[in-house]
Amino acid sequence: MREIYPSFYKEFKCIANLCEDSCCKDWDIDVDSETEKFYNTVNSPLGEKIRSLTYTDEYGERVFRSSNGRCPFWNDDMLCDIYIGLGEEHLSRTCANFPRVRVDFGDFRENILSFACPEAARLMLRADASAYSDFGGYYELEASENDEDYMSFLLKSRSRSAEILTRQNEPFAYRLADCLEFNAQVQCVLDGKEPAPLESGDGKSGFGFIFDMHLGFEIMSEKWRAALNDAAESSAGLKISADFERDFEKFALYYIYRYYLEAVNSGDVMYSIKRIVCAYIVTGMIDADFAQKGYPLSRMRILQRYSKEVEHSYDNTEALNAEFDRDGRFSAENLISLLESTVE
Figure: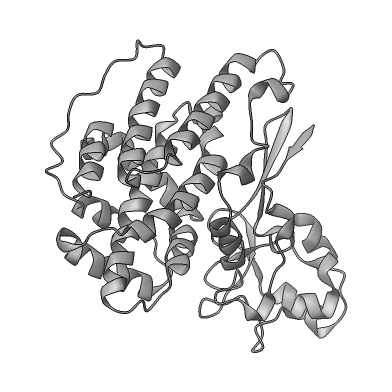
């Protein structure tokens, strides 16, 4: 099996209590069965605490019971008691791996970092498209005969999408609109239909429905909820800045390389592109609102927080895809019109 990495992947190193956020904060921490078996053998006060705070959540997963949005083993020094007491080798698989993400496609496996980690986000914001040069053409990947044509098509479409998103000397909103249109044609091919030009959308719906959807999600941080509300109320008078677009291009590349190939299972490439559009509108408007307020949260943290709040919630991502299927305002035509309306 071929292992594929972005060039910055091996540069990552957790900065522990120097991190401005934490993977020990806001989330329930999954405990895999092998690690739990070891914890059950630990004969110490720490072992007793671990066992007393491990329970089965509503999804049937074994997790640590959080307290006030904190892992119970994240101490006052913002360090992990399990790491200190038992060693790094006895962290749960989730803790040991985050923010590293592996996706196995049978003949090859792609490895990437999650934007929800601030240190990983910094690495990705410093990188450019060349960092993903190994995520290349299908001819290099030695796929099996059964899925070769389908996967080859998706990989070529992903590469083309990345090229569109990184075109220079034009507003990012136009590039994203072109990426939507291109992938609408890709979707026609996947659906066995003849690709056809898109009709013009009217874009009269405004951005409110996108913010309303995000405000209806499971939200961990009340500060994030307030930022969403403020940006939604001011969105008609806000303009997404060129400086933000340069950073968001890096976020969009991350999204393309992490999620586009989910179409292998879903059969839908538009899910990933429409999620990028939603992220662009929401984070771009929050950034513009924060610019007027002297940036109470940095641009990196806006994008990182979006990833943590939306992307890493199974319920939220399922709700996004469901709304794309249900609500006609998420049509490619309407989203293209909305994107074009953001450019003066």
